[in-house]
Length: 229
Image (cartoon, rainbow, N blue to C red; front, side):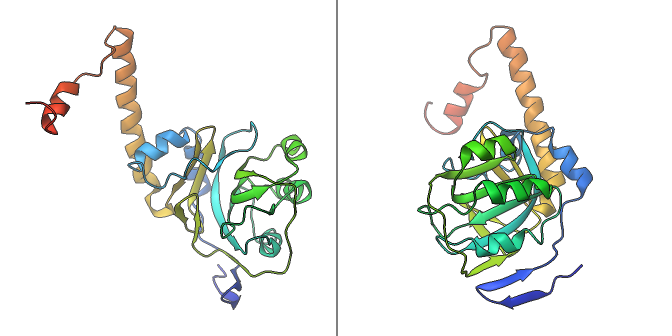
């Protein structure tokens, strides 16, 4: 595995990263983003500004991280040389919402390369054409203006996206509810915690079917936390 750093700070990239095992990625498809957020104790959930740009299949894959300057996408183009099928490009734009970092042509290339999806803490464009291509895209919105291609930027270093730190190789899951990041070293623990929450919800569904509409234990919780005596 080539973990050498090419370039210098601000203009640098790492060619290869440690990815979540493909079999583990397959396991993740059975969980919703909400399930995994529960399994993470509500942490590592991107904020509501990061939303699905159009109806698309669930997005599941490993993060290739890209940091670009506001209004620039040079290193996003470079990232296309480094991705593998099943990856998710996760892009930090340094708060750059005035210029789109990707549109129809780039998204078409991503789809052909087998990318599982893209998450942009910023904006994209050409939504009508991108929807036809069908690759899942999550972003803060759309804008028709395109950015520059001069840099700086970095690939496969820690970034911030949707209020969450994302490390290269982390598991990314996105659906209609939003996007969650599962740290790659914690995936199995998160799956187990999500399974417990799903079992608890299944029990609650059974109670509702029996006409128990108020969750049992509410008064006990209120007493525990000092609301009632």
